[in-house]
Image 1 (cartoon, rainbow, N blue to C red):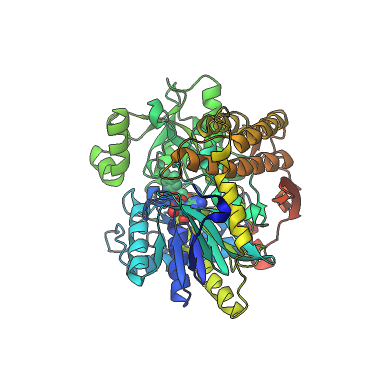
Image 2 (image 1 turned 90 degrees about the horizontal axis):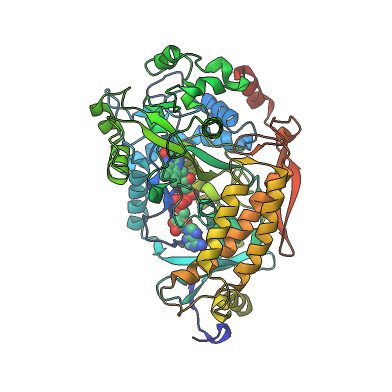
Length: 605
Ligand SMILES: Cc1cc2nc3c(=O)[nH]c(=O)nc-3n(C[C@H](O)[C@H](O)[C@H](O)COP(=O)(O)OP(=O)(O)OC[C@H]3O[C@@H](n4cnc5c(N)ncnc54)[C@H](O)[C@@H]3O)c2cc1C
């Protein structure tokens, strides 16, 4: 194989390069193209296979199709309260205001949503949303969203680079100048020259053992941003979705959509008790039903108080965790989710076709006849690249981020359905602003130096040069997953976080020396070795931020600081790389203007 400095790289030049072809990346690429930018879209899997395709429940948007009382103000309030008021208020405002237009636009582009009897887009219930608000297509909404966006992107003629992994962002004088990556099939290197890059690489779940996330979620965008000098916000907030499959072992962690509870499913412990009534936090008492009879009335009239099974995800995940720890769990270490005794088989098969199929085929469980066994699973990261709320540009000129890789929008905890709407709203904004930024540079485009490309190539080739006696990437990955699962999971303590950080130092050394066999042509071991570098820096960011935040809030629970602390309600934890070392600092959270603050106060109980 040629040495890094002897290889001739494939080169491309664009105005905007979008890394990631999920909902955020596709929407950003469409927006950049429609703004006149020569745009490329890169993804490390096949086009259409992004994580977005797995989204089941729906897209949250206050369209008021079922409940005329719904509007952007209520959606804004729900999002902020769900995020425990740690959201960037401006992002929550833009999101709530613009989500309905983005859904209608998707419909105009060909998405076939489920309908209400009077022909409007149907909207379903999800945890933390005051009204039924999720526009959906059965339980396959992500698939329809990706199909529609992909069709539009392809019909517009946007250049797509599939199965190409970006390993480094390139800079010139402090500004973004391009990206460096490799074709997964041939292992050949590629250089993209572009003054504006949009990161849309999704989440970080593959660092945990039990996760709903697929192989692509290795935190590449978070790590690329850090190494390029950008800052990450609130990485301690990782969402453990309350309902993942627990049995059989091969499917542990696979998501069981919240729609099951939205459509009437109830959580039961081994004693058959609806235990969520024992876990209603003070903050939500006024609007949460306190008896099963009252809870059930809510399914027919949303003016009643919501069932506690549909409290925000962090509350439900902690309650399940506690039931299991207290010996009231199911045979395989979860609890039960019962829809069989609450809805007819016809209803279940119509509303939840994928869930019916998933349990039947993977676990041999007929959910129209018996309850499901479920437990929390690592699902989503609220933390991400710090961006300007309106433009989505990071602190690095020319570097934008949208979707799950961006931080701020969801605060300490994301409400279900708010991700798909986030992708559309901020994907569009990122694409438009990236195009505008690139155009404004005119003749002054930053350049990609040969040296910076060679440096990136050398880093990528390093695992081939290591002694075969060293660890292989698979064993290091397994060790990393054990550390994050056991020491940086749902419930954290200072002692365990410090242990995790010590272990991560060891793992970083092991990962830096991992050896891979074979050559560059489709070599999964090599790919994982490169992904590991990203997973490790991102995992350390999570652990350090979790140690810094000495309180419990949303997706971050400290056993040694079990209460939320008003001081921390005003602070973001910012992560950055200083001379290659992960460092954290606190930064005041921007406060909403009076009219929005009033909205929150008026409605808060
Ligand atoms: C099972 C499941 C169900 C869900 N259901 C819902 C729901 O009902 N409603 C909701 O709002 N949210 C839901 N979510 C969350 C939501 O689906 C995700 O947060 C969202 O799809 C993320 O979209 P994205 O565009 O940011 O990233 P993704 O859709 O994950 O796309 C990431 C893209 O980046 C590419 N990529 C990554 N790294 C690189 C690299 N180094 N080089 C090149 N390309 C790269 C990938 O190939 C991919 O194309 C669900 C998530 C899961 C896992």
